[in-house]
Length: 84
Image (cartoon, rainbow, N blue to C red):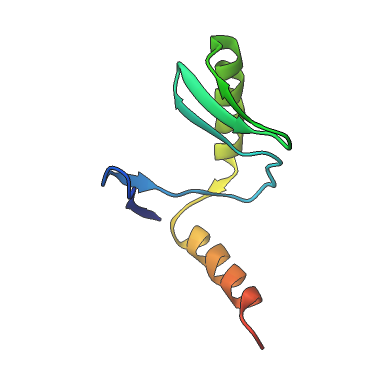
């Protein structure tokens, strides 16, 4: 699945990671990342910590589904939320 990023009109790919992730994080490049914990949003600029988040992302990405498989998961989720 893909779509336009509303902030800068760039095409982005959307991947569904079927494993449960406890906390969200965003890696902007090899110099900056943001993570959310139960108590705060953390802005990270330590290269070793960013490298750890990059490895975590690569591991999660290996379990991601794309295309028709991702669309099937979204459709199943929508059906489970609709009134019967």
